[in-house]
Amino acid sequence: MKQTHAAFLTSALLALSSFTAHAAPVDYQIDPEHTEIVVTWDHLGYSKPSAHAGGVTGVISYDASQPSKSAVNLSVPVPRFTSHVPKLDEMLQGADFFQAAKYPDIQFRSTSVADQGNGNLSVSGVLRIKGIEKPVVLQARKNQQGVHPMLQRPAIGFDATTVLKRSDFGVDAFAPGVSDQVQLRITVEAVANAAR
Image (cartoon, helix red, strand yellow):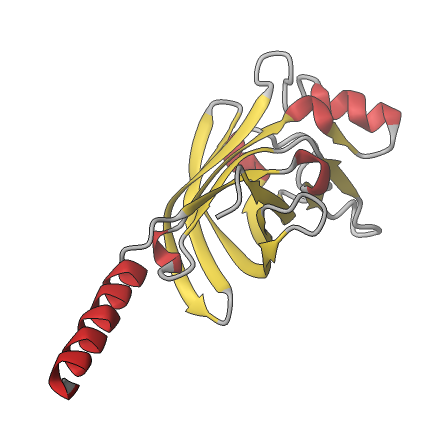
């Protein structure tokens, strides 16, 4: 009887272990109302202004058991960029910078994710701006994962940063007075479609 009980427990543990190891990633839809990208640059050495982008959409596919199997795909609407300075906003949308009428979206898709422990991830991917694709690496940190208290659905949140050269993407107006190197700070909140 004891052998039968022990065999049952062993089988159950092996089955549970197998299920955990092969648990599928959960797809979280990015919440555009609680997701923002902030771009900061140096202006003539005197100040470090920023522009903000909202309306971000996309999917984070996160595997809690194996974060390295996670992925992200997002889109940023260029018309939603704002510096809160009307004249500069016109320039950002125009020919000197993003040419929003011709290239209305900025896109990022991950190619690999490296789990660095304690909720830290290195997310390698391809950034597409004005039809130009370049590799970038986001240093990300998981803020929280759980049931959203308002929506009662699984939710997840991350912050991420990277530094890039805008000239790599054909957005090089007024450099070097306006710094070619810019910093991106991203905060993302995303929610799964249904409770799990």
